[in-house]
View (cartoon, rainbow, N blue to C red):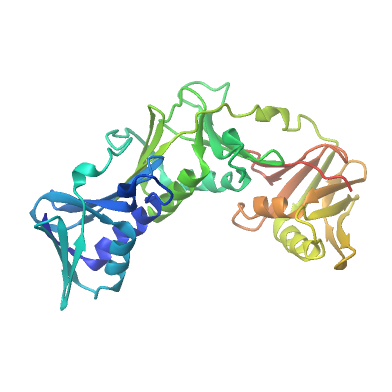
Length: 373
Protein backbone atom coordinates (compact mmCIF):
# COMPACT_ATOMS: atom_id res chain seq x y z
CA UNK A 1 0.00 0.00 0.00
CA UNK A 2 1.38 3.38 -1.04
CA UNK A 3 -0.72 6.55 -1.24
CA UNK A 4 -0.96 10.29 -0.66
CA UNK A 5 -4.02 11.93 0.92
CA UNK A 6 -4.71 15.37 2.40
CA UNK A 7 -4.92 15.71 6.15
CA UNK A 8 -8.40 17.24 5.76
CA UNK A 9 -9.76 14.21 3.86
CA UNK A 10 -8.11 11.80 6.29
CA UNK A 11 -9.50 13.64 9.32
CA UNK A 12 -13.02 13.60 7.86
CA UNK A 13 -12.86 9.83 7.41
CA UNK A 14 -11.49 9.35 10.91
CA UNK A 15 -14.20 11.54 12.47
CA UNK A 16 -16.79 9.12 11.10
CA UNK A 17 -15.13 5.83 12.03
CA UNK A 18 -13.32 6.36 15.33
CA UNK A 19 -16.42 5.92 17.50
CA UNK A 20 -17.05 2.48 15.96
CA UNK A 21 -13.82 0.95 17.25
CA UNK A 22 -14.33 -1.92 19.71
CA UNK A 23 -13.43 -0.62 23.17
CA UNK A 24 -14.36 -3.44 25.54
CA UNK A 25 -13.42 -6.46 23.49
CA UNK A 26 -11.65 -9.79 23.88
CA UNK A 27 -10.40 -9.43 20.28
CA UNK A 28 -7.43 -7.01 20.27
CA UNK A 29 -7.65 -6.61 16.49
CA UNK A 30 -10.94 -4.73 16.98
CA UNK A 31 -8.92 -1.91 18.57
CA UNK A 32 -7.52 -1.30 15.08
CA UNK A 33 -8.61 0.49 11.93
CA UNK A 34 -8.57 -1.46 8.70
CA UNK A 35 -6.91 0.76 6.07
CA UNK A 36 -7.51 -0.22 2.44
CA UNK A 37 -6.30 1.66 -0.63
CA UNK A 38 -7.59 1.11 -4.18
CA UNK A 39 -9.40 2.87 -7.05
CA UNK A 40 -8.26 6.33 -6.02
CA UNK A 41 -9.59 6.08 -2.46
CA UNK A 42 -8.43 5.29 1.04
CA UNK A 43 -11.10 3.40 2.99
CA UNK A 44 -11.03 3.29 6.78
CA UNK A 45 -13.10 0.58 8.44
CA UNK A 46 -13.93 -0.04 12.10
CA UNK A 47 -16.23 -2.46 13.88
CA UNK A 48 -17.19 -3.79 17.30
CA UNK A 49 -19.13 -6.57 15.50
CA UNK A 50 -22.44 -4.91 16.46
CA UNK A 51 -21.90 -1.67 14.54
CA UNK A 52 -19.60 -1.34 11.54
CA UNK A 53 -18.56 1.71 9.53
CA UNK A 54 -16.51 2.42 6.44
CA UNK A 55 -15.49 5.96 5.48
CA UNK A 56 -13.53 6.93 2.39
CA UNK A 57 -11.39 9.81 1.21
CA UNK A 58 -10.02 10.63 -2.22
CA UNK A 59 -6.34 9.70 -2.45
CA UNK A 60 -3.54 9.33 -4.97
CA UNK A 61 -3.00 5.57 -4.81
CA UNK A 62 0.33 4.41 -6.22
CA UNK A 63 0.03 0.84 -4.93
CA UNK A 64 -3.16 -0.82 -3.73
CA UNK A 65 -3.11 -2.76 -0.48
CA UNK A 66 -4.31 -2.89 3.11
CA UNK A 67 -3.15 -3.08 6.71
CA UNK A 68 -4.48 -2.48 10.23
CA UNK A 69 -3.17 -0.07 12.87
CA UNK A 70 -4.15 0.90 16.40
CA UNK A 71 -7.09 3.27 15.96
CA UNK A 72 -6.44 5.53 18.95
CA UNK A 73 -2.76 6.10 18.20
CA UNK A 74 -3.35 6.56 14.47
CA UNK A 75 -6.07 9.16 15.10
CA UNK A 76 -3.82 11.07 17.51
CA UNK A 77 -0.93 11.01 15.03
CA UNK A 78 -3.05 12.38 12.19
CA UNK A 79 -4.50 15.07 14.46
CA UNK A 80 -1.00 16.35 15.26
CA UNK A 81 0.36 16.29 11.71
CA UNK A 82 0.77 19.60 9.82
CA UNK A 83 -1.80 20.59 7.21
CA UNK A 84 -1.25 19.41 3.69
CA UNK A 85 -0.47 16.10 2.04
CA UNK A 86 0.21 12.95 4.01
CA UNK A 87 2.03 10.02 2.44
CA UNK A 88 1.43 6.53 3.84
CA UNK A 89 3.23 3.38 2.82
CA UNK A 90 3.33 -0.15 4.20
CA UNK A 91 6.92 -1.30 4.49
CA UNK A 92 8.63 -4.52 5.53
CA UNK A 93 7.39 -6.13 8.74
CA UNK A 94 3.88 -4.61 8.42
CA UNK A 95 5.11 -1.14 9.36
CA UNK A 96 3.00 1.84 8.28
CA UNK A 97 5.27 4.73 7.34
CA UNK A 98 3.59 8.13 7.67
CA UNK A 99 5.25 11.24 6.20
CA UNK A 100 3.97 14.83 6.31
CA UNK A 101 6.36 17.69 5.46
CA UNK A 102 9.29 17.24 7.86
CA UNK A 103 7.54 14.67 10.08
CA UNK A 104 8.08 10.94 9.65
CA UNK A 105 6.63 8.19 11.83
CA UNK A 106 6.43 4.42 11.57
CA UNK A 107 3.60 2.51 13.24
CA UNK A 108 3.62 -1.20 14.01
CA UNK A 109 0.67 -2.67 12.15
CA UNK A 110 -1.04 -6.04 11.87
CA UNK A 111 -2.01 -7.94 8.76
CA UNK A 112 -5.44 -7.15 7.33
CA UNK A 113 -5.98 -10.92 7.15
CA UNK A 114 -6.47 -10.89 10.93
CA UNK A 115 -9.31 -8.37 10.73
CA UNK A 116 -12.79 -9.92 10.89
CA UNK A 117 -15.25 -9.67 8.01
CA UNK A 118 -17.33 -6.49 8.00
CA UNK A 119 -20.95 -7.56 8.65
CA UNK A 120 -23.52 -6.01 6.36
CA UNK A 121 -20.99 -4.18 4.22
CA UNK A 122 -21.59 -6.39 1.20
CA UNK A 123 -25.23 -5.25 0.98
CA UNK A 124 -26.00 -2.58 -1.61
CA UNK A 125 -28.98 -0.45 -0.46
CA UNK A 126 -31.45 0.16 -3.27
CA UNK A 127 -33.99 2.38 -1.47
CA UNK A 128 -33.11 6.09 -1.27
CA UNK A 129 -34.53 8.34 1.43
CA UNK A 130 -33.94 11.96 2.45
CA UNK A 131 -31.29 12.23 5.15
CA UNK A 132 -32.98 15.25 6.78
CA UNK A 133 -36.29 13.45 7.29
CA UNK A 134 -34.77 10.26 8.66
CA UNK A 135 -32.55 12.26 11.03
CA UNK A 136 -35.58 14.23 12.24
CA UNK A 137 -37.49 11.02 12.96
CA UNK A 138 -34.60 9.54 14.92
CA UNK A 139 -34.25 12.77 16.92
CA UNK A 140 -37.94 12.74 17.83
CA UNK A 141 -37.74 9.24 19.37
CA UNK A 142 -34.18 8.61 20.56
CA UNK A 143 -34.72 10.59 23.78
CA UNK A 144 -37.30 8.04 25.00
CA UNK A 145 -35.09 4.94 24.59
CA UNK A 146 -34.38 3.09 27.85
CA UNK A 147 -30.91 3.52 29.35
CA UNK A 148 -31.28 0.23 31.24
CA UNK A 149 -29.37 -2.33 29.16
CA UNK A 150 -31.04 -5.20 31.01
CA UNK A 151 -34.33 -4.26 29.30
CA UNK A 152 -33.21 -5.71 26.01
CA UNK A 153 -36.31 -4.89 23.97
CA UNK A 154 -36.40 -1.23 25.11
CA UNK A 155 -32.80 -0.17 24.37
CA UNK A 156 -33.60 0.67 20.77
CA UNK A 157 -36.15 2.33 18.52
CA UNK A 158 -38.87 0.28 16.85
CA UNK A 159 -39.20 0.81 13.07
CA UNK A 160 -42.41 -0.32 11.42
CA UNK A 161 -44.71 0.54 8.56
CA UNK A 162 -47.99 2.09 9.70
CA UNK A 163 -50.81 -0.43 9.57
CA UNK A 164 -53.92 0.03 7.49
CA UNK A 165 -52.28 1.75 4.53
CA UNK A 166 -51.78 0.47 0.99
CA UNK A 167 -48.31 -0.79 0.14
CA UNK A 168 -47.50 2.28 -1.97
CA UNK A 169 -48.61 4.73 0.73
CA UNK A 170 -47.36 3.10 3.91
CA UNK A 171 -45.66 5.69 6.12
CA UNK A 172 -42.74 4.76 8.36
CA UNK A 173 -43.33 4.88 12.12
CA UNK A 174 -40.61 5.09 14.77
CA UNK A 175 -41.46 4.38 18.41
CA UNK A 176 -39.34 4.35 21.57
CA UNK A 177 -40.24 3.87 25.22
CA UNK A 178 -38.49 3.32 28.53
CA UNK A 179 -41.65 2.27 30.34
CA UNK A 180 -42.27 5.74 31.81
CA UNK A 181 -42.60 7.74 28.60
CA UNK A 182 -42.97 7.16 24.89
CA UNK A 183 -41.87 9.01 21.76
CA UNK A 184 -43.50 8.30 18.40
CA UNK A 185 -43.33 9.87 14.95
CA UNK A 186 -44.86 8.84 11.63
CA UNK A 187 -43.72 10.20 8.27
CA UNK A 188 -44.12 9.25 4.57
CA UNK A 189 -41.07 7.29 3.39
CA UNK A 190 -41.40 6.55 -0.33
CA UNK A 191 -39.90 3.27 -1.49
CA UNK A 192 -39.26 1.79 1.94
CA UNK A 193 -41.31 -1.27 2.87
CA UNK A 194 -40.39 -3.20 6.02
CA UNK A 195 -41.89 -6.66 6.11
CA UNK A 196 -41.90 -6.69 9.91
CA UNK A 197 -40.99 -4.61 12.93
CA UNK A 198 -37.32 -4.13 13.64
CA UNK A 199 -35.57 -2.71 16.72
CA UNK A 200 -32.48 -0.61 16.04
CA UNK A 201 -30.16 -0.18 19.07
CA UNK A 202 -29.61 3.20 20.70
CA UNK A 203 -25.88 3.51 19.91
CA UNK A 204 -26.33 2.54 16.28
CA UNK A 205 -29.05 5.16 15.80
CA UNK A 206 -26.93 7.86 17.48
CA UNK A 207 -24.13 7.14 15.01
CA UNK A 208 -26.56 7.02 12.09
CA UNK A 209 -27.97 10.41 13.05
CA UNK A 210 -24.48 11.89 13.16
CA UNK A 211 -23.85 10.70 9.60
CA UNK A 212 -27.29 11.82 8.40
CA UNK A 213 -26.80 15.31 9.82
CA UNK A 214 -23.52 15.62 7.93
CA UNK A 215 -25.26 14.83 4.62
CA UNK A 216 -27.17 18.16 4.59
CA UNK A 217 -30.39 17.03 2.94
CA UNK A 218 -28.89 14.59 0.44
CA UNK A 219 -30.49 11.25 -0.31
CA UNK A 220 -28.98 8.21 1.39
CA UNK A 221 -29.38 4.49 0.74
CA UNK A 222 -31.06 2.27 3.31
CA UNK A 223 -31.68 -1.47 3.49
CA UNK A 224 -32.82 -3.98 6.11
CA UNK A 225 -31.49 -7.45 5.48
CA UNK A 226 -30.39 -10.55 7.38
CA UNK A 227 -30.60 -8.89 10.78
CA UNK A 228 -28.83 -5.64 9.83
CA UNK A 229 -29.84 -2.09 9.02
CA UNK A 230 -27.44 -0.66 6.43
CA UNK A 231 -27.13 3.06 5.70
CA UNK A 232 -25.03 4.30 2.78
CA UNK A 233 -24.08 7.97 2.54
CA UNK A 234 -21.88 9.82 0.06
CA UNK A 235 -18.57 9.07 1.78
CA UNK A 236 -19.50 6.47 4.38
CA UNK A 237 -21.45 3.31 5.03
CA UNK A 238 -22.70 1.92 8.33
CA UNK A 239 -24.33 -1.36 9.30
CA UNK A 240 -26.11 -1.89 12.61
CA UNK A 241 -26.96 -5.30 14.06
CA UNK A 242 -30.65 -5.29 14.97
CA UNK A 243 -31.97 -6.29 18.40
CA UNK A 244 -33.54 -9.73 18.36
CA UNK A 245 -36.49 -9.13 20.70
CA UNK A 246 -40.20 -8.36 20.70
CA UNK A 247 -41.08 -4.68 21.08
CA UNK A 248 -43.95 -4.15 23.56
CA UNK A 249 -47.46 -3.30 22.40
CA UNK A 250 -47.15 0.46 22.75
CA UNK A 251 -50.77 1.03 21.65
CA UNK A 252 -51.88 0.05 25.15
CA UNK A 253 -50.45 3.26 26.64
CA UNK A 254 -51.62 5.68 23.94
CA UNK A 255 -54.78 7.41 25.22
CA UNK A 256 -57.82 6.60 23.10
CA UNK A 257 -59.93 9.49 24.39
CA UNK A 258 -59.38 12.69 26.31
CA UNK A 259 -61.14 14.46 29.12
CA UNK A 260 -59.18 17.74 28.94
CA UNK A 261 -57.34 19.57 26.19
CA UNK A 262 -54.81 22.41 26.54
CA UNK A 263 -52.78 24.48 24.07
CA UNK A 264 -49.63 26.07 25.50
CA UNK A 265 -46.75 28.04 23.94
CA UNK A 266 -43.92 25.51 23.86
CA UNK A 267 -41.15 28.04 24.53
CA UNK A 268 -42.94 29.47 27.59
CA UNK A 269 -43.63 25.97 28.90
CA UNK A 270 -40.01 24.96 28.47
CA UNK A 271 -38.70 27.98 30.39
CA UNK A 272 -41.28 27.56 33.16
CA UNK A 273 -40.42 23.88 33.62
CA UNK A 274 -36.70 24.64 33.83
CA UNK A 275 -37.31 27.21 36.56
CA UNK A 276 -39.75 25.13 38.58
CA UNK A 277 -37.65 21.95 38.32
CA UNK A 278 -34.78 23.71 40.09
CA UNK A 279 -36.68 23.32 43.35
CA UNK A 280 -37.05 19.54 43.07
CA UNK A 281 -34.27 17.62 44.78
CA UNK A 282 -35.05 14.03 43.81
CA UNK A 283 -34.26 12.42 40.46
CA UNK A 284 -37.90 12.05 39.47
CA UNK A 285 -38.23 15.85 39.06
CA UNK A 286 -41.97 15.65 39.69
CA UNK A 287 -43.77 18.97 39.17
CA UNK A 288 -47.45 19.73 39.68
CA UNK A 289 -49.71 21.02 36.91
CA UNK A 290 -53.00 22.67 37.89
CA UNK A 291 -55.03 23.16 34.71
CA UNK A 292 -57.87 25.68 34.73
CA UNK A 293 -59.96 27.44 32.11
CA UNK A 294 -57.48 30.20 31.24
CA UNK A 295 -54.15 29.17 32.79
CA UNK A 296 -51.95 26.37 34.03
CA UNK A 297 -50.14 26.72 37.32
CA UNK A 298 -46.85 24.78 37.47
CA UNK A 299 -45.35 24.28 40.91
CA UNK A 300 -42.82 22.29 42.90
CA UNK A 301 -41.41 22.14 46.40
CA UNK A 302 -38.90 20.27 48.51
CA UNK A 303 -37.88 20.60 52.17
CA UNK A 304 -34.22 20.95 51.20
CA UNK A 305 -34.51 23.64 48.51
CA UNK A 306 -37.79 25.53 48.80
CA UNK A 307 -40.67 26.00 46.39
CA UNK A 308 -41.47 27.55 43.03
CA UNK A 309 -44.55 28.41 40.99
CA UNK A 310 -45.11 29.61 37.44
CA UNK A 311 -48.37 30.46 35.71
CA UNK A 312 -48.92 30.38 31.95
CA UNK A 313 -51.91 31.41 29.82
CA UNK A 314 -53.50 28.53 27.91
CA UNK A 315 -56.47 27.64 25.72
CA UNK A 316 -58.28 24.95 27.69
CA UNK A 317 -61.34 22.76 27.40
CA UNK A 318 -62.44 20.32 30.05
CA UNK A 319 -62.83 20.18 33.81
CA UNK A 320 -60.06 21.57 36.04
CA UNK A 321 -57.50 18.87 36.83
CA UNK A 322 -54.25 18.54 38.79
CA UNK A 323 -51.62 16.09 37.60
CA UNK A 324 -47.93 15.41 38.24
CA UNK A 325 -45.32 14.84 35.49
CA UNK A 326 -41.58 14.40 35.35
CA UNK A 327 -40.37 17.81 34.19
CA UNK A 328 -37.30 16.40 32.46
CA UNK A 329 -39.38 14.04 30.34
CA UNK A 330 -41.53 16.89 29.07
CA UNK A 331 -38.44 19.03 28.43
CA UNK A 332 -36.90 16.21 26.40
CA UNK A 333 -40.00 16.10 24.21
CA UNK A 334 -40.16 19.89 23.82
CA UNK A 335 -36.49 19.86 22.81
CA UNK A 336 -37.34 17.79 19.72
CA UNK A 337 -39.86 20.29 18.33
CA UNK A 338 -37.44 22.70 16.69
CA UNK A 339 -39.08 26.03 15.89
CA UNK A 340 -41.09 27.70 18.68
CA UNK A 341 -44.83 27.09 18.45
CA UNK A 342 -47.67 25.68 20.47
CA UNK A 343 -47.86 22.26 22.08
CA UNK A 344 -51.15 20.41 22.55
CA UNK A 345 -51.58 18.57 25.86
CA UNK A 346 -54.32 15.95 26.11
CA UNK A 347 -55.11 14.77 29.63
CA UNK A 348 -56.99 11.75 30.91
CA UNK A 349 -57.61 12.76 34.49
CA UNK A 350 -55.08 12.87 37.30
CA UNK A 351 -53.91 9.26 36.85
CA UNK A 352 -54.11 8.76 33.08
CA UNK A 353 -51.18 9.23 30.67
CA UNK A 354 -50.66 12.67 29.17
CA UNK A 355 -50.29 13.06 25.43
CA UNK A 356 -48.14 15.86 23.99
CA UNK A 357 -47.92 16.89 20.34
CA UNK A 358 -47.06 19.98 18.27
CA UNK A 359 -50.15 21.97 17.32
CA UNK A 360 -51.21 20.91 13.84
CA UNK A 361 -49.01 17.81 13.72
CA UNK A 362 -50.47 14.80 15.47
CA UNK A 363 -48.01 12.51 13.67
CA UNK A 364 -45.40 13.43 16.30
CA UNK A 365 -46.40 12.33 19.80
CA UNK A 366 -44.89 12.18 23.26
CA UNK A 367 -46.61 10.21 26.03
CA UNK A 368 -45.81 10.80 29.69
CA UNK A 369 -47.02 8.64 32.53
CA UNK A 370 -48.40 10.66 35.46
CA UNK A 371 -46.79 10.76 38.89
CA UNK A 372 -48.66 10.72 42.16
CA UNK A 373 -48.74 14.13 43.83
